[in-house]
Amino acid sequence: MLNLRRSVVGAALVLLVSGVASAQTPTPTEIAALRVDADAGNADSQGLLVYYYSIGQGVPQDDAQAASWYRQAAEQGYAAAQYNLGLMYELGQSVPQDDAQAVTWYRQAAEQGYAPAQHNLGFMYANGRGLPQDYAEAASWSRKAADQGRAFAQYNLGAMYVLGQGLPQDYVEAHKWRNLAASRASAENQTRYAETRDALAEKMTPAQIAEAQTLAREWQAAFDARQE
Image (cartoon, rainbow, N blue to C red):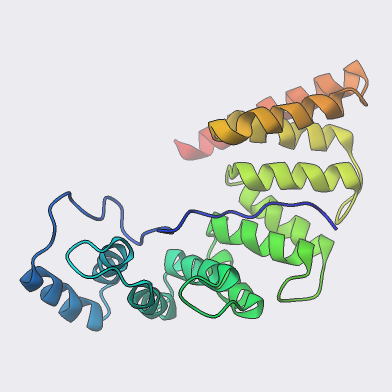
């Protein structure tokens, strides 16, 4: 079994709106107004209620309430909420642990192009959690997330190329993806990713390393151009 890593975003998970909350605690009147809007299907209001219930700001901290608002937003088709609900099911956080449910919600978000969900769906396929193990599907979903610049997914895709699971073994491609992952990872993972890239390089010829580095630079240039 591949030792792949999934994307986890901590206890508060990912909020539905950016810059969701100010330092000012909402008043009971403001919370009531948010509830009215949230009940009417406003995803921003639902996201704010998730945030407030998750941290206990303006309301008692209540993970079950947070999960309930996530579900309402997820059922409306909001990818971030679908991902978060899947993560809650995978971790058993505020809902019963259920890998099959996690896969259901990850897939809905992944099919909308949401990179964290694509990565986690790949993780579930690779490890046979909530569905039959399928390395080809794991590689396919990991690549979708990797192509969006997700460092975890890039690292995992590199691991698949090293082992030849889900796609042909290819050290050049493996080095390329591990190099990209190391360049994009957070500080806590950057060193480890670089070490695995360098360990792989010891099994490669100078020509292979040079080719992998060229491919990584070309990928990065194309990615940067897409962001403009």
